[in-house]
Length: 261
Image (cartoon, rainbow, N blue to C red; front, top):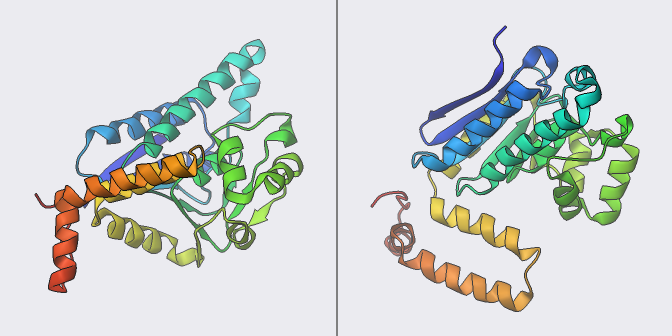
C-alpha cells in the first residue's frame, strides 16, 4: 500500500495529511520527509490561508515508528536524530506561515504525534480522541517541540507531570488543561475542521500572521518591547489593503472582502 504524507490545496485551504493509516500514521523516514517537504513548500504559495493537519484513518499519529528504530541497530542514534530533526524542520515551517494551522485529532495522538498536534495554532479533537506524551515510557526524552510548547500551554508543573508519568488524557481533559481548542462529536470532526479552516482562509492573512508572531515573541519579550512591537505591527497592518478594507467595511456596515488588491 502506498503511504507517506499528502498535500492538497483547495479554496485557500492546504490539507496536509499523515497517510499511513495501517500503522496508526507512525512516523518513519518516508512519512516525515514528505511531511517536511510539504510543509516547506507552503511558504512558496500565495493561495493558502489556512492549513488543516490530520491523520488518515482511525488515529492522528501514534508517534515514531519503533520498529524502524529497533531495526536501525547500532545506528539508532543517527536514525532517531534524522527523524527528529526532519520533523522539526516541518513543524518550524508551519509555524512560520502567516496561515493558521489547525490540527484535527481523532483516535491517538501520542509521542511525536501529540507534539505535532499541539504545535498547531488551533487543535480540534473528537470526543473519543486521547493524548499521551509517551516518551519516558520507552526511555526516551521529548521531541517535536513539546518541551517548549507543553509548559507554555499547561504550565511547568503540569508539563513535568505529563512528561514523567505519561497520563493518557481524554479529549475532555486535554481541553480542560488547554491543549485542545474545541472538542467535537466524532462524526463532526471533518466538517468542523473544514468549516474553521475555510473561515480563516477567507480572513486577513497578514493579520493572522502578525498574531502568530506577536504571541510567539511574547514569551521571550519584555513588556516594554512587546508594546513597541505591537505599535509598529498594528501601524503596518493599518496601511495594508486588508487593513484599509476592514476599516471601510466596518464604516459601511458590511462584511469585509479580504485578500483583494
